[in-house]
Length: 136
Image (cartoon, rainbow, N blue to C red; front, side):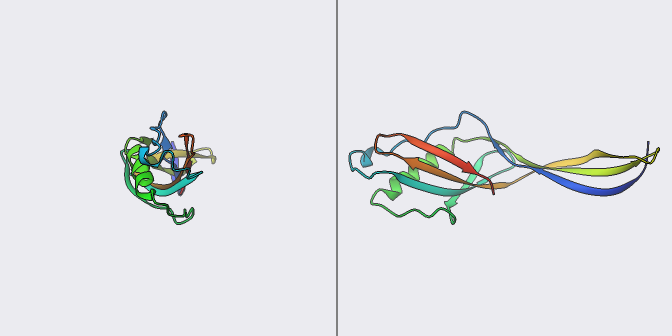
């Protein structure tokens, strides 16, 4: 039995990718162009259902444009449209005072929230594509 609530706090859990993630395909029109390594970095918004709902250019990982920039961007967006996440969530915790003077945390509620993250795709001449995901 609790006597009263001392404080409340929120704990946020980040959205987590659900494996396997769809891979971006190296654009067919760019094969053989000897572009070296091409990097495409984007900022994504993940909705409360775990879907990528917005893809914007990254402001922290700028990439130089190339003649195939549009095709690489389309490959990234096609892969991200298939990605799924467990949604980000806020858990509302209350620190309650127990009858014997001790305290404990209890879950007062939870809600799913939108999340943002950065994804960097690296395309190699041999057709290999890698992706790295960074938090907010």
